[in-house]
Amino acid sequence: MKSNQIAHYSDTMAKGDIAEEQMQKVLSFFGFEYDNRTKDKKYWNLGYDFFTTNKGTTFEVKRSFNVQRKTIVIEEDHNIDPELGILKKGWFYTSKADKLCFMDTNKKKNKIALIFNFDQEFKQYYDNIKSRFKLRKNKPTEWHGFIRNVSTYRIIPISEIPNNFFVIVGFG
Image (tube, rainbow, N blue to C red; front, side, top):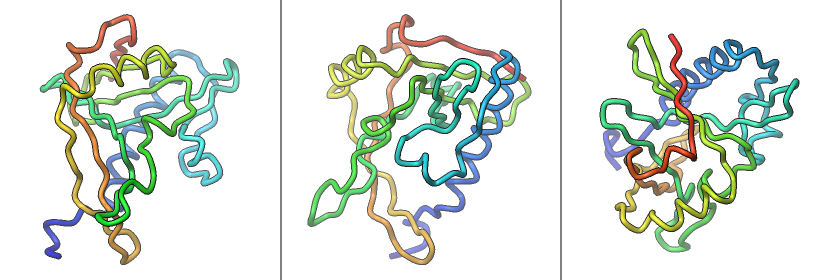
């Protein structure tokens, strides 16, 4: 497989680190005391990155918010094998977080985050509209010398999501 057909896990993680740093700024700005659990493997299967110690709220942080296009990306399947099918559902179906935060990771000064109540009502709404948007596949990912199977996702215009599901937070 050619190298331009493979995504590198370290590149993906570096982009995620930017979103996580931004989330710390948002939580601090609003006065939340928090534990950053992004590097703690025992929380990876719970699907959340931050836990606010003064509110008890959990946050899953995603860098898949495109301000210019006004879209977010939802990962549906995390690991697909061409012969075996879906090996693991994506974060949308596995995360146990209370809030879902899509961060604008562009390098401009003023940034925007979308913070969703990640509850059953929102999940049901997404399941009802998702068929209107193309299911896409990511490139296979190289991780520690091994090629992982691909994941699937959908690009959703923010205009398709009623504003009662999220708040917009500006920060710089």
